Length: 319
Image (tube, rainbow, N blue to C red; front, side, top):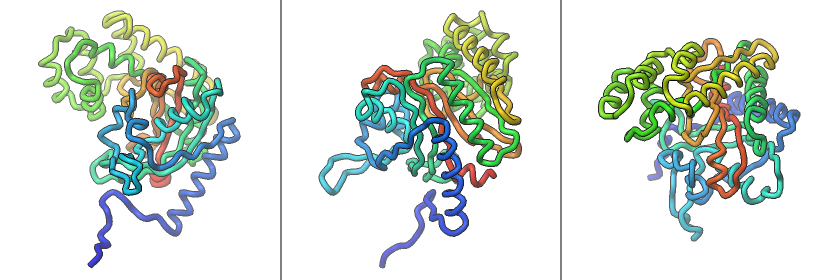
């Protein structure tokens, strides 16, 4: 007898919920189009190497892989659309020096982001490729803020970090970057202390990490450790503070922008500025973004790249 038992983490949408998703999708895609971003619609399936090559290797444990019965070999269901955009930019659109692309479609995670969460997300976002440095980051952050306003959040906040700060703090350590980011994302000082116990780290770096885990991560934290860690740390700190100063004065509406060194990337393919969007009364981030130049190199095209994405289901539920 066939089983109709639902798959954990995967849900149907119909009625008002389906209408709400299409309405939200239409609002954001119209905003992106008006801002000069062209829509692309990548396929749901890819070769595993296309999703996991280079910096995309950090997606490996969230990617469902299977053998194609039609004989195409091993295929993978996308868990994130950014690697697909990188592939398109490096192949089909290689002749274009600057690419401003947007997308909206389903992605599937091998396991939920949070306990009891959904494995199916409706990822929507933009990628700005070919615009280096602060100019690209500012454009994308400005569009992220406008997206939260368009979605109906009246007082959104952008918290901005830089992966270079953490990389400088844990340089030379045996533990992997994903171990450090996981502990910092959980704000777990005890677990962080246990991991640092086995590492040869300066007392200053250890103190900086513990303060991050305890929630002390703003401008004062950044300035207090500048000049005490390394030249790489100082460079990342300077880039972050300069960007926050510049972009903060450009936001429309009641959008706030803060430096926050504890912002961790959702996926570890980011190579510079990171940011997350929040709103009053919403406990989790509404969107994530940042620079990912390293992923483009992995796909064979050395091209600056930055972007952001959100899950439409999460936006609808939060609104």
